[in-house]
Length: 144
Image (cartoon, rainbow, N blue to C red; front, side, top):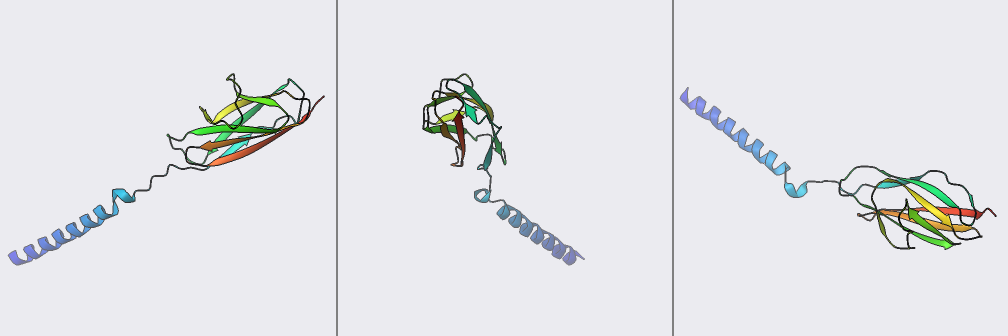
């Protein structure tokens, strides 16, 4: 009887060691996959197609993320290639073309003010700190 208990104890101990090794090897810290880089889409509410010189157009923008990472940062830059105008974030000073500005929120409003009597076109690029980038194009015809 004593011999049977020793063999039984040995088998339980052996199973415990095998199970522990399996659990510890499957939880390797170097192999943990924590996702930080989430793609996103840029949604823009409809804007007028015509604008007159001096008129300001509101552009409502939402960055829709496919996941949430607390340290994700979003940036905006723009380039105007036809006509003249200014683009600003709420009441902030106008953006300079091709300069990068951090966005404090994922839902915001931009204000484009026409400074031209001809058609105007510009693009905005919204990017994140992981290298993802989306481009949105705008074109306004002269209203005058």
